[in-house]
Image (cartoon, rainbow, N blue to C red; front, side, top):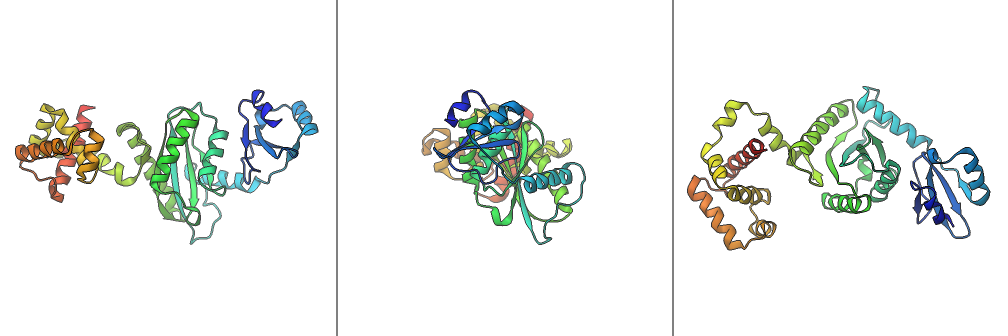
Length: 301
C-alpha cells in the first residue's frame, strides 16, 4: 500500500527495512502488515494530509535531534568561523566533498543514498544545492577509492547526474581542521573547473596541475619548449605520453585505455624519447615531461 503513495508524493523514498538514522526532514511511515517503510518530505505534506496518513499508517518517531544539531555545528565551524564541535581531542576525521553536475537532484534522496553506501552514523552537510560534505570519524572509514568510484557510477545511474568526490586526508580534530578543509575545498574547485569531470579527486591528483597553473610566466616559459612544440605538432603524441605517465608507465593499461596495440604504444614512446632526448622511465625525466603535459593542456584549453 505504501508504494502507492509514490505516485502522490514524488519525492518520497521507499525503504527495504526500518531506517536507522534518517534525516529529520522526512515523515517516516510504516505499514506493519506488509513491513513496508516510506519517508515523505515534511514540506510535501500538509497538516490535514498528515492526520489522514496517521489514521492509515503508523508514524514512526525517529530521534534525529542529535545528528541535526551536530550537522549544524559542523556547518558553523567550517563555513561561519564557528566554534569547534564537541568531540574528544584525540578524534580524527576524513572529510569527503561531493559535487553534482546539477542542483536539481533531490537532496533528501541523495543523502539517504549516500548513507546507504557509507554508514548511518556519518554526518552529511550541504554547502549549496549541488555540493556537500560527508564527515567520517576514523572509526567509520570503510570505503576505498575504488569503492567510491563504483558508488559514484551507481549514483549517476540512479539519479541521472554526474557526481564527483574529493577524498580528503585523515585529519586530527583541532582548530586547524577548518584551514585544512578550506585548502582541500580550493583543490576540489580547481579540479572541477580544470581537470574535466572524473569521479574521484585527491590531493595527489590535483596538486601537480594546481602547481603548474600557479607557476609564474617566466618559469612556464623555461619548461622544455621542445616538448611543448612536439605536442603542438603531434596531439596524438601528447595524449599518448600523458596517459602513459598517468598510468604509472604501465604499457598494458595505457594501450587498453588508448585502444591501441602495445607495439603501437611502444613505437610512439620510442619516437618521443628519440625526438626529445628525454627518457620517461627516469623519475626526473618523467616529472619534467608530465609538467610540460600539464602546461600544454592548460594553454590549449
